Length: 369
Image 1 (tube, helix red, strand yellow):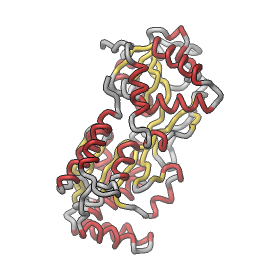
Image 2 (spheres, one colour; image 1 turned 180 degrees about the horizontal axis):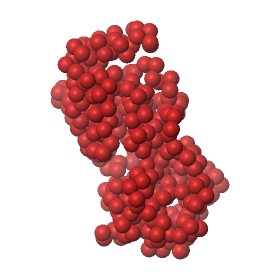
Image 3 (cartoon, rainbow, N blue to C red; image 1 turned 180 degrees about the vertical axis):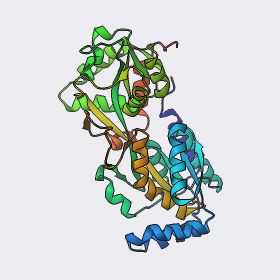
Image 4 (cartoon, rainbow, N blue to C red; image 1 turned 135 degrees about the horizontal axis):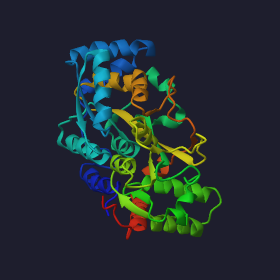
């Protein structure tokens, strides 16, 4: 069964093939133009950097190449909002996070950079950073981001929050899960859906349980019972379609923004109990933004990075996403109890949690839908 880190393992082979010496960075010579542009902006007082980036971006041809794993219904309005703000055309390459990473790596290896900026999942942003593809950003927009959202060479731009979701026509008030442990209850036998690539959720819940007094044997028993209750499906958007149509009563985990957006369109789905407050620990996984060291349009990449952490945050809220900064009118975290997401542990994991999750799902049937 192929889960989300498999592509990263393949990319690891690619990385090894294009690294040299002991540094471990991808062998690409960042064009002097990009280096000089970033340095020119960074040398100015922070309150003058945006204006300088605009001036330089105009000389670059007012175009931006963005690689992202945002779904089309998110990426398109985000690109349009940036274009409206600065008059800069955005060319968007969309793919899953592994595809975005692999394409950026291959282009760097070939010395033919295609992306100016990247916005994707934390694991792939960490890989891009670790292999020396990302340039440093030090604009004032960073002041709006909490310390937990700042990483080496990239910054959290939005959060995907993990919570169970259920169909309110099929799961009546009081019958919904009130803890991750509840997913193991016999009453959910045959009613639960697991997503095939959610090894990061699996890791965070496991470590949370172990950190709050459960033994490894107790944790293993819980996961065994959850798997026995479940079928599997591929893709969080697809899962929500099944849930909305009543083909699946409960999802062990989905991103809250996907559930909320479906509910806003009239689907009988929710991730909150009748009280409006969930006691289930909510893990907020960061997606991030970075600018490429060898960008063809470095000033434009800098401008997009800055915009996504400022005005762009408001656009994300309009689209129902959870921003990485505090934005007036943002209700995406209402009723949730956030706990830390294990970025460091998963970034250094090497695919071990992927293998463990794969082993858990072995023998669990597909959704068949």
